[in-house]
Length: 170
Image (cartoon, rainbow, N blue to C red; front, top):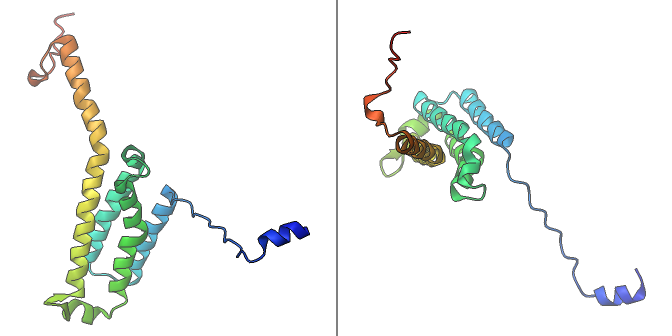
């Protein structure tokens, strides 16, 4: 560094270099879901919790290959990733840190126990993941409907009666 460079830079704070972490990959999401499963198993979570978490994880797993159809920067894609890597694990951690007897029987929010609060949160996540999965599948479903209309217009047969597979005698 020469005198001129030093003179220009004096008094200026070194600007920190910001590194944006890469977006989670499909593999990262699957690892996060496996960690959630391990939490459930290690802490002997109640069946009412386990069944809901399994439902959410299954929906996320089925939706992952279709995330690109939602748009990689879309709110829906973000919600799937955040649910797998943040929302679901955090809800479970908060509940599982509590003593089981206390969490399942002691009201903490009005008349709701920690277990009931967790179940409500899991139901909300499950409903949201179901809506996102429907949105991801809708494009292919609409393509199927459009193709059926094309075939009907092209060949003029209604699909209501079913195909006529009787080709006659050989």
